[in-house]
Length: 599
Figure: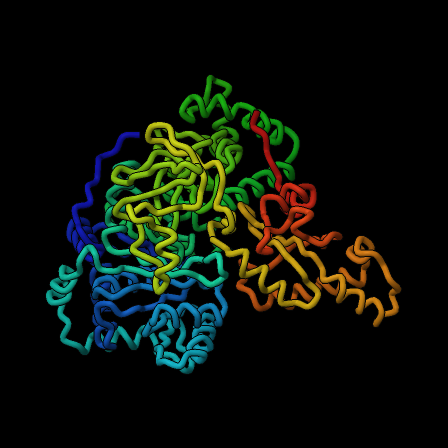
């Protein structure tokens, strides 16, 4: 898979943008969804839009070092606004659109943001609620429809047109931004339950773009589809900064509801994915085949049975019969990805090898990568010509990795975070005196190739790539009078589950009040009255949690957890590994998976 090499010579993100806008002026940079298709926006037009947004921000007194929050679904406006903020030397604070007002308020307060740009109406209303909880003055700007109490994006752009920030002056200002200047503060879940702000500079992202294009065949002929949240560093780096750095195109999906059709229409050559997305596509394919039945089902099974042979043949069909199956079956699957797809890159969570092999059966290349928010994010990624499904790939050039004595992966390099914002103790715990960032992941190295053998000890990494603090969920559950202890689950899943130890003393009182006698704990956890009680309690708790942290499945434990029985440490913390092993059958039932064999 040979393509021309791209060299990212810029030192900062604004310089990188200006370089690409000049070099690829007439070429499409972005594609906005319009009707049943996509409308192109050239690099020259992109530069003009970024200048207009920057002028509007400047007219509203946004200066270098100021923090500006973006609370929206992906869109051209999100992307342009980010570039505009960065071009002024200001700092972008992305916020997941799934977060509730109280969590938005925390991020605004902690970051000291002076403005928040909100997407659709419900987000603008939620932003107003969040700002109302703050003592300071934060301006809420509505990016879509004007909402009472907000300023509009259109009005901000009009403000810019009335100011003297000429295109030439703006470009000169872009070049004043330094590589060491902070570009963004990205909030990720912490072990205390409160999110931590990861501080990354311009150098980190420019380095990432240059290192990735040295490791992956990406250039100006490529087209990306943006649908993973831009508030996540994975999409922000690999689906936002990277394409612009090499003159590629970015098509913006309309919504998750339109995603399947958007992929077909946009025809991306590179698709960023998380395992949950790939798993959902697989399940839809399997359901369609099951419904079809007959000869089609048998041909599909034959295609799957030849997966390993096709993968060993560099994803080319094997033999005449393999070519026939490719024409009858595999080509139809590839059409669902737009028929131009060169490869998918999977990140954000562990990719099961059997899932990658499933797509390999149809000639679709899935490359796994590895990284963290604190590393901007890519540490390693597989190369198309040297792909291994059991590995997270080859370490990026310029990134240093070593394995500590306890097996923990340590990283050092230009894309390592500066600090956790306002958290010097957490920063000192994560970055040692030699500059090594301690990832919390366990792995091994052979040459330049990296394997992950265990995930982070506490933080839940969901199938959609989101990092979730189990402490936040567990603390919310334990606020209930009926809950004595809880442990959240959800690694590599698309939902959160929980093991819950009831407060049996309180339940005894409930028994007396309801005339239920004196049942034993094992009888209580099976009693319909108590199961209904916990269902209502968990529904109430869920309403106070962000959507991705809500408990979807749960099990009531009949035994109390103690130090003596092995579930708790001397400091009364849950021993997660011990609990998982002891209650493996219950955990497996809560975390049910559907596996497909390609042997």
